[in-house]
Structure formats: structure tokens, C-alpha cells
Image 1 (cartoon, rainbow, N blue to C red):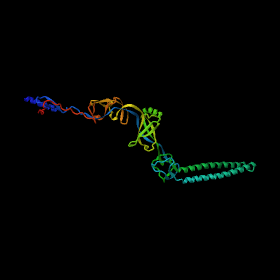
Image 2: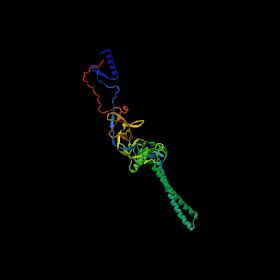
Image 3: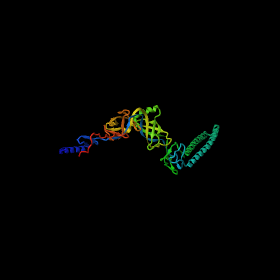
Length: 397
């Protein structure tokens, strides 16, 4: 081989190496095989996939609610006195009528006895006045007594009769005050911290309250929903019982089920929402006033809806889309309109058909037409080098 041919062969080898491939040649100089891949070839992107399926999807309204006591009662004394004892423990459930506080009853017992004694005195004076009236009435008729004495006797009877009626009212007040020294629970509920302890003097109807009781059986959950759901909510309540379920953050128990019992009388124009309340039996005391919970109402259901895992839905400036995997293992970016979401799936209103394959993980690596390798499936092997009938020599140097 001449010097000029050797130089050309060397330049060819260098060009091929720089291009990413090494070519073997026969002794006659013909090309046999290209070993390796071209630098421009791109590897398939690993992704997770799922099929577009059909399901019946419930139409739900989700909201964040606040647990509210059925009633909140502040316990105050109705009489002045000293608290002698408390009949409950802080945080302990109490029933209606249970003893809460005992105020020293002795001053009120004395007042009751005094009122009873005053009534007995007035009754004795009334009897004497009646006797005087009868005597002066007879004497006046015979002319032995003046008309003035008769009228004074009759007035005395009226005075003592009124005094007896006033004494009876004084006795009733004294009895009530004596009863008020025993403070019983007006509702069944859970008392909070005791704010005034035994040994302290209290005044009637003054702050602070002795203790506050929250009635928690039943209990309410208040939450707001968008006003566009209001018509459907009213229709469901008119048809029957509208159920609401509550899940408690960090609580692994099942949802708590209750019933919608209140719709506010106006929409909040600043937020476009309306307040609702649901009532729960709360027999197991899982709900606590002031607690934040997740509320779900099921209004209707979509039959035979096309659904995909929610993580397949992507968003860009043009809207929502999914990557659809075609038969040649390339992806197509397909615009879609999404509907309600239930659990971990979302309804697709258009853009896909039943049975198509969508990408659920690995979308960041994809672009339209990109090759994919679904995880869990075998990737295509590289093609082996083509064999030649000629004997292969060492690379040309």
C-alpha cells in the first residue's frame, strides 16, 4: 500500500473514532460492522405506568371543620358564701344533677328559720286582729263602740293578712337560697379546669365562673363549603338524611359518621361560602371541642367514569395533561379535562380512551416522542453485530 493510501486510511480511522464508532475492515478495505452506539442515541427513560380504567366515582365535597360543643355552660354561684367542697374531678364526665360544689348552707338555714318565725308571729297577730274585729263589730252595731274603732280593727286584720303573705314569700326565697348552696350539673358533659377552689368566698353571678362544662354527647362540627354546592346539598337534605364523615388527623381509627343538621341563613359574600354543621353522637369521645378535622360529604356518583391514578395528572401553562404510552414505547403528551377526585384516582372527562396506558411516575424526564421503559417490564436488548463471510482482521492502524 502506498504512502498516500496509508495516510487516507489513518485519517478515516481517526474520523470514525471521533464519531463514536470503530470500524473493522477486511484486507480488501470493505466495511463489515459498526461496533457500539452512535453518540446521538438516547436511553429509554424508566417510568411507572397504569391503565385507564372505569369506575363508579362518588362526587364528594371536602372541607376542614372545627369541632364545637353541643352547649357550653359556665357554672356560677347564685348566692354569696364560702365554697365548702367540690363533688367532681377536673376533666371527669358528670351527669345532669351530679353535685359540683357545696356552699356553706348555715347562714341560709338561719334565714329560713327566721322567716318561718316571722310568719308564725304574724299569724298570731292576725288571729288577735280578727277577734278584735268581731268584738268591735258587735259593739258598734249596738252603739257601744265608735265606728272609728271598728274600722281600725278591720284595717289591722288586713295588715296582718298581708304580712303573712309577705312572710310566705320570704320563706320561699330563703328556701331557694338554701337550695342554691348546692350547685348541681345542669347538663351531662365534661367540666374543664376548676377556676375557684373550695375555701374561697364567692359572690352571686360574678366572674370568674367556678367551672365550665362542655356538652359533648352529641357534638357538632362546623365547616364551610362553596356556594355552588348549596343547591345539591339542599336537594339531598330534602330527599333524606345527608351523611357527613369526619377523619381526625393522626387518628388511625375509622371515620366518624354523622348527619348534616344545620345550614346557615346566608352566604358569606366575602368568601363565597356557607356555614354548615353536622351532628355526631360521639359516644366514644373521639371528637373534642376546638379540634380541627377533615369533613367529607358524598352528594352523588358518576357511573362508569374513566379514571387514572391522580399522580398521572400533570399541569403546565396550557392546563392539565397526561403522558400516554403508545405501542412503540414512545409517549404522547395528551391534554385532558379532569373531574372529581376520589381517594387516589381522578376522573378524566376527555382526552383518553378505556385501556390506554399513562405514565404515573417519572414524568420529569419525558418530552413528546421520548422513549420509555416501564418499570417491571423487560427492556429491549441491543442488536448483535452482523456477521460477514470474510475473516475479520484486527483494526486498521
